[in-house]
Structures are given as structure tokens and as C-alpha cells.
Length: 223
Image 1 (tube, helix red, strand yellow):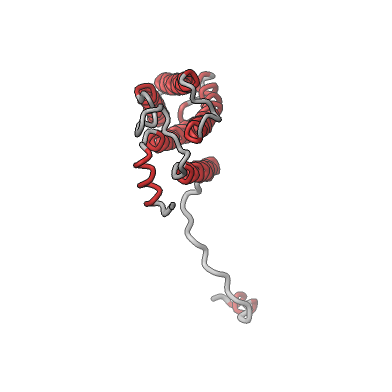
Image 2 (cartoon, rainbow, N blue to C red; image 1 turned 90 degrees about the horizontal axis):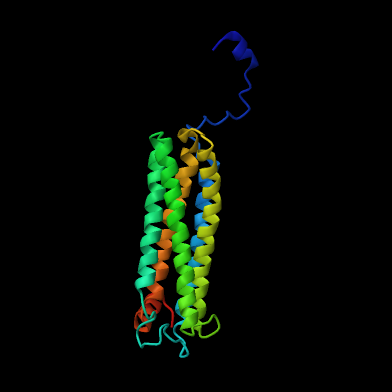
């Protein structure tokens, strides 16, 4: 310690804590997406809890009319599930193309992702139309109400994702370098993966017979 430092030292004051080593900061957009996904997961979790509770009441009717078969024909929903899976894979391919700075492949993958998503939404609308033809209206019975609610809210979240996708695709179409789009494309891919996982849970519950719903309710502590 030098003489000047010794004369100006103030030993009665507490020493400042050592600086903490900090790693690379997480981008604000990534943090925002995590918060958004947590909120959406909570929303669907509450919907599904209400679904299981309501399914235990005596007036619950399985969709499709046949005992033990909630849906008369699962083929359209399986087809829609395949379309949403293809959309999620296309978004992942777009993320990989952005990492490799492949602008042409990035634009193709983004376009395919949107195309498959629109086909999924159109397919869900067609299923709604078929349900209405079969006499399952929103207010027909509690099971039908939950079907429209869960699939409709899920579709709205996908439509909202298409708005963010449109901004990314517009920038890619204008020739913005892929490396500048890496974060945005990666966030879109994560959002699509999350909504695909949510749809799998919704589909599994909507296609479950009342006996399975009762078992799930008992597991969750619902009486």
C-alpha cells in the first residue's frame, strides 16, 4: 500500500463486496417467451383441471354418441396432429437454416411451417363443421363445450404465433441476413414445439373415454 493510500484509507467504513462473476446475459426476448409459455401452460392447466372436474358429474356425455367413444371418428384429428407435427419440424428446420446462414432454406422452411399451420387450423375448422353437422353445438352438452373451448383457444394461440412468424418471414424475404434472424427464428420454433406438446395433451384427454377421465381425476385428487 502506498503512503497516499494509507493516509486516505477509511478503515471504519465497510469494504464493498467483491464483484460477482457474470455470464452472458439472456436476451430479453428469450425471457419474455419463457414468461409467455409459463402463462399459457398455466391457462391450459386450469382448463384441463376444470375439464376433469366437470367430467365427473352425472350429466357428462361422451362426444360422438357411442358409449366409451368421445369422438365418433378420430381420423381427422390424427391428420391434424400430423400437420401440426410437420409445422413444428419445419420451424425447427428454419432454425437450423438460420444457424447455417442458409437464406434460401430459411425462407422455404418458414413458408412450409406457415403452410402446415394454416392447414392444421383449416382442418380444425373442418372438424368443428362436422361436429355441428352431427348435432354437437357449443351448448349441446358440457363435453362439446369443452371441445370447442380447448381447441379454439389452442387455435387462437397458433394464429397469434403466425403474426410473429409473419414479421420474421417479411424480414427474411427482404434479404435480412440469417444470422440477424437466428434469435427470432429460434423463438418461433420453441413456441411451435410448445403448442404441439399442448395439443398432444389436449388430444389425449379429448379422445379419452369417461373411464379414463375418472382414473385421471382420482390421480389428481378430484372426487
